[in-house]
Amino acid sequence: MIVQNFPELMTLAELSEWYPDSYGRYELRNGVIFEMQPTGTH
Image 1 (cartoon, rainbow, N blue to C red):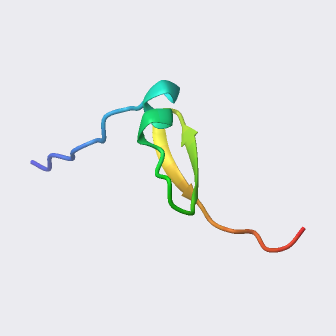
Image 2: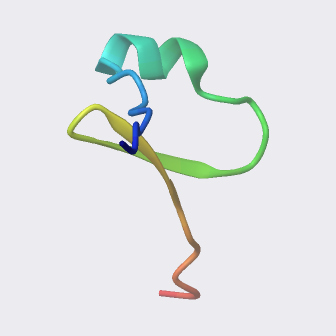
Image 3: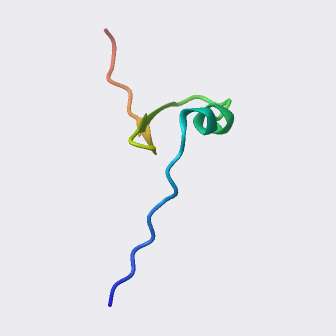
């Protein structure tokens, strides 16, 4: 039997508190944080 741990889902308010002060962009999708990669110059 394989047991998989799923991360706890996060709310927008929790993301605001968690958001690091350092460089980086993050997105909240369905309660899960994703680090966004730079897309280059626009």
